[in-house]
Amino acid sequence: MAARTIDLARAARAVDELLAAVGAPTDDPELRGTGQRVADALANDLLSGYDLDPKTILADRAGSRAPGLVLVTSVATTTMCPHHLLPASGVTHVGYWPGDGVVGLGAMARLVDCFSRRLALQEDVAQRIADALVEHLGARAAGAVVDLTPTCMTARGERRHGSHAVTTAFAGDATKDAALRTELMSAIAIATKSEP
Image (cartoon, rainbow, N blue to C red; front, top):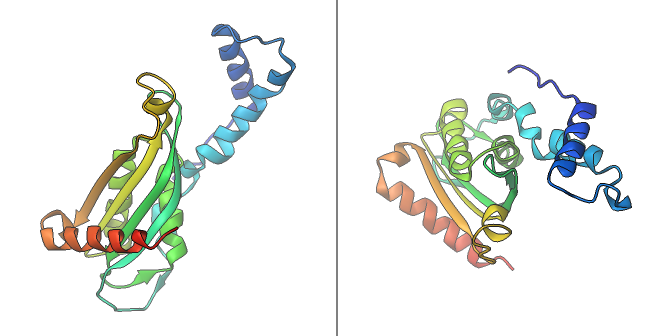
């Protein structure tokens, strides 16, 4: 995977120009340094997933041969809508049925970051997570449920405050086995029911 080329100074100037172009009061002292802060937030945080490689994340495997569902729920997630450049935040639930091995549970959270910390539709985030578990980990089946509050829906346009968008994706045997999909969704419901 090729490294990103980042020009923070150019990005900061572009943000400052954007603010001026949309008529923001650029003489407001609170806007001093905003271009730099936005450029840094985008390059080094909100879009940091472009620097992560799913194959590397899933390479360090444990030797367990346990065949049952491995599930991590409520992984804090933020992604950036590629259409409006607005964030969507919430949680992701990720599960897989192992093939030749398992990864540490933290790797599953890093996998979520890998695909969510990009300019991405949440439908694609869910599918890329599930596909990576099958492709790079060798999982027999995998699934992801992404539950986000998109600010492109709550802060603009329809302004439907409190709305959530929930997307599901499956890969491997789960694409054709309804029992596996049901097991994953039931396990997520049980696990999240006990959360505060």
